[in-house]
Length: 392
Image (cartoon, rainbow, N blue to C red):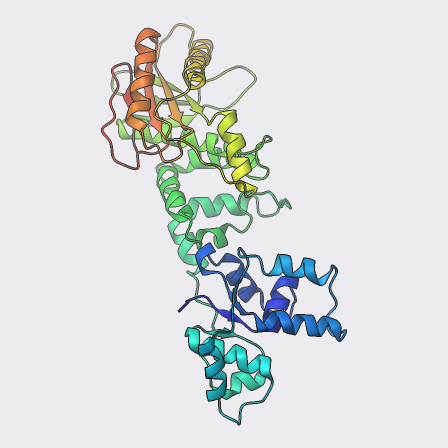
């Protein structure tokens, strides 16, 4: 038994060619089916296509062998053989059903597998001999909009820019896929929702600039856009500590920190730094996106390069703070967002401990350090002696 749809031969060909006779909704659904639920074709369809080419009724832009190599790839479809059960089912079909052997085999395959058939053949549709496939109802776009109002605002801010690399290209479609993206975007939305309107308008404008084109360099995607979002996490931290009047400091020609606020005790300045994945991990990501299989050992220790980047980020932050506030009239905070090479953060407690040990021997006396890991999926207790850990 399989839950994936069975394709009639003409549907298979239309899908492979992007034929307008197949609705965009069906094409979208077939394209998005998971690897373990790819559409099914009967192997009689291969014979049908060969006959159509031979008779001149189907014209291909490549050799038949090359077309089959692409169109029967296991990542595209699952080719189902004509089994004894399917052959026996053909014999049980009523005589009133037309005698085309390929159609009878395809209908019999659908019945034996118990899977719905996608077809535009009127005789099959009217026969009532098999269940027909209907495009599954998708979550309404408005439901996504209701859950992610600020991200949809950002999407609309770049909607008029024609760029196939835009982060928000097919955004709604990607949210409906079982990839975990909706969960990640819901978490990001909660971070953005803390911002007051003025701060959101500021951050949205800067994020939109980076949403149009991914960062140059393989495997880094829209890293610069997410670096902007890091500032929203720092805003959330200040808000959670009871600070008031939080705002992003306007960018100018001189170096400035990112945020300023007020507490009962004193004004606060906060510089945000994001530590991103290494070049080695970015290359692995690029290879994976191109279909390469990479097997990585569990990374239980951070790389020396990450510790170096942490030190450099703190020094750079202190320079920005001192230029803006040379007499140190404000309380200084350096807020560091951590993106480890280990995407799952399986050993995040060990990573944090290693950064802590580094900072104990390389102390920062001029500012408070706050470290915000990208995630803590296993809910481990994370503490540091040299800094605070923020988990929103």
